[in-house]
Image (cartoon, helix red, strand yellow):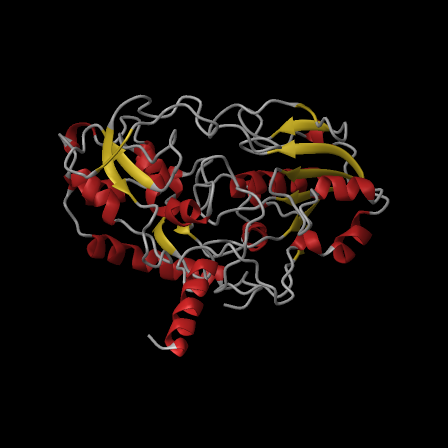
Length: 398
């Protein structure tokens, strides 16, 4: 083996290790002058000086040096009256769907008000005395991930109470493409408030701009909405996330598999909550023809995981190597076909699957034996209609 070939081989291995050729969300930060909204204080500090503010954020509200935006604002003399905590809490350690409690931030002494559970929308008394509410959360760009719903309710409350909403923008790990069924109005819920596809291809700042601009808020109200854009952000690139967005999305692979695997949350199939690789596998006790075995057990991200203690059979996707810039129905269809008595109890009886899908169409198509290609073809007209709406609010290069 000649020296030149050895050098080229070693270089290739290094590039793969660094994620250059990886189809997954990059672990390496783009160095071409990229900045999140949080890392552009020269744009937002002048807007906050002398104002009383609230802030909606969690553990992902970090600046490039890992300083939390709350700590940075306090250090720079910004008066924060209230921290509002979304699903998973201010420190991001609550299970999905777990009640998040009010409290006080130990480090700063600032009161914390939960925006999850019964109080999803800030009340007038909670906004009283505030000039601006700042929003800074790392989203994952998927319709059923609830941070966009929290932002929607915040903008609506801001409009109703004459409070400005200021969003510090962050990357969308599923940006640059749209895919999935578009929600139908009848199925609106906290895991899907608008008629958008599962993957909608907008940053959270662009999404808020769309919700406000299209008058999708209650009674068509519109808020004073200010967006602090990212610097040198491109929708086709991938940027590092500074902290996991929630306990069961621990890494970039789980985030990229999430749009495809989350449908299982409306079925009798586990997505690996209670394992070391949540949202990187799927399986159940009733899919025994599938090769991989795992047993969900209580852990940090799932205190009482679905199918707790039961041996499950499925697939481990943690080494899945194909490009994930598309929603994959292969696993859902395969699990249904391998399920014992699928027409009887594959889908949860509360039909949460339909809530996630945004209508009952996908469930009926799977039961009818439709192929992935046939199902995806049925999404095309609605995706084209949404694309026209989306195009009005895109502020970054595709």
